[in-house]
Each structure stands twice: as C-alpha cells, then as structure tokens.
Amino acid sequence: MTADQASPDQEPGAQEPNAQEPNAQDAPHRAGFVALVGRPNVGKSTLTNALVGEKVAITSTKPQTTRRAIRGIVTREDSQIILVDTPGVHRPRTLLGERLNDLVRETLGEVDVVGFCLPADQKIGPGDRFISQDLVEMRQGRRGPKVIAIVTKIDLVGRDTLAEHLVSVDQLMHFDEIVPISAVKGEQIDVLMDVIASQLPEGPQLYPDDQLTEESRDDRISELIREAALEGVRDELPHSIAVVVEEVVEVDPDGDAFTPVEPGTGRLIVRATLFVERDSQKGIIIGRAGSRLKEVGSRARAEINQLLGRKVHLDLRVKVAKEWQRDPKQLGRLGF
Image 1 (cartoon, rainbow, N blue to C red):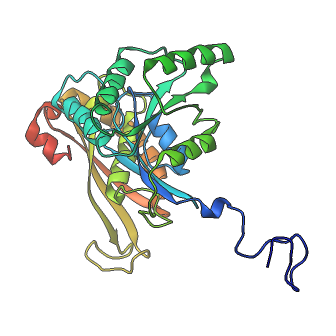
Image 2 (spheres, rainbow, N blue to C red; image 1 turned 180 degrees about the horizontal axis):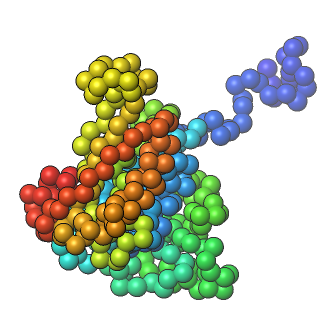
Image 3 (cartoon, helix red, strand yellow; image 1 turned 180 degrees about the vertical axis):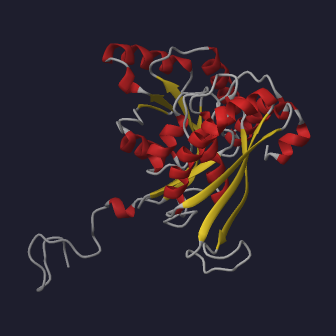
C-alpha cells in the first residue's frame, strides 16, 4: 500500500498503528546518586527534605548539623533520584571534623551528579572556592560527576542581588547547569528535579516505590533527638552533642517489661543517651531541675510520634564522654 492509499478500515490521513510519533513514554528511565555539597548552613538538608517531600534530614541554624551522608529517595515515573545530603565542608579543628570532610570527598567519588549549593544571600567565599577546586580536580583526567550549581535561599534576596550572584556563580567554575531555588518557599523545586534527572545515567529503578530514605529507624530517631537538643544552646555546645538510641521496646502497659505483646498493641518505649564532652555541658543540657531536658524530650517526642505513627514514651539520659570528638575509640563507639 502506498502512502496515498488507506486500508478499508482506516480513515484517510490516518497513520499506520506502528507509525506512532515519539512521546514521553519512549524516553529512557534514568536513575543515580546525587550528592548535595556546600559549606555549613547553606540549606542542603532543607533542600533534601523539600525534594523528597518528607523530613529525612534534620535541620538547624547551627553549623555542621549533618554528620552522615543521609540518603533521600525521590521516585518519579521517568527517573529515580537518590539524594545524598553530606556534612558541610569546613576547616576541621577536631578528628570528627576531619572524618566528616573525608566522608564528603569519599561520597563525591561515588555519585553521578553533584549539586553544589551556594546561598544567594552570601557572597562566594573561600569555602566555596575550596570545594570548587576539589570538584575541578575530580573532573581532570577522568570522567567525573556532572556538577549542578544550586543557588539556594533566593527568597531572601532581591532580583538585582540574585542576578549579580548568578554571574559570580557562573564564574566560579564550569557547571553543567545553574538552577536558583528556594526550598523553604518551594520555588523551582520541580525545575531542579527535572534538571537533576536529565543529568543521571540511563538505568532501572534502584529502590522500591515507597522507600523514602536509606536511614534506619534508630538513626532517624537519634537525629530527631539531636535536632531537639540543638535548639537554644550556645554556639560551642552543638558540636559536642551526640545521641545514641539504646533500645526501642514494646511492653504490656498493664504488665511488666518482660510480658510479650502483639506488635502495635503495647506501650512503645524509646531509650536514648545524649553524650557531651564536659560536666558543665551536661548541666546545660539537663537545665535547672531537669527543665531543659524535659523541653528536649517534649520536642523530640512529637517528631518521633509522627515518624513512627504512634505515641511513644521517651526516656533520655545524659552522659559525659570526655573529648569524644578527638578520641578515635569514642568516635567509633558513637558511630563515626
């Protein structure tokens, strides 16, 4: 049959069934890992939560809040983005600081895309240049990750200031893309996800549809407690706080701790320990007559209730682990 002819069952001008035009369904599926990097307090954790659509990373105004490479998972029809929220790169003053910087460098060598976060309300500084130099060196002599400049906190500046900042960012290094966003306001988040997905390699989905993070239950609980403890403390104290979940147990509310119960029917108890480095810090965390620790417990319990979908009893203790940030053995015991 020629192009001018139509079959008896086909209307004139209609295409053959196998002559369909390309559409979005024909596009290859993409999947990969994306590291969010930047100086402390540039909005990486807030952005991670905004992209995932749920709280998977704690946030705080205190610098160096993130201490692990936290993975948040965004599953879309055409792609799966595994976000790795890394600790802020800084000049280390302790062994913990050195290990956090090493963790960032190790993470950068294992991802497909790097999202370099540069806040719009702060000028390009030495810390940003240090990170950019690392990224440039990674891309020399071998195929390094794609690098996207993510200009965060655009809701805090005017258009002129943002325009000047975008020029400065563009001059910092070669970026595959530059995307200005506001995670707090939700501005350009969908655009950023599209840009990230376009830079990922073709590949199948790596995690189930309903999985939002790779963090364990206990790790998420310990982070929520630490987030609550960071609120309202003096600048030198946040770095000295570590939290370990000792156990999560379900007990019979009418019996003793050894009475077995059906999961979901008993009283859920979370026991955790907050570690600080000095006795004076222990007093600050506990507060007068335990008032400060009660506030931490109340704030953390509300978040844990939401995470677990049920009410919990939170039992918090405070202990001193002298100079744990500088002690390799204690760092190991505390998960670093």
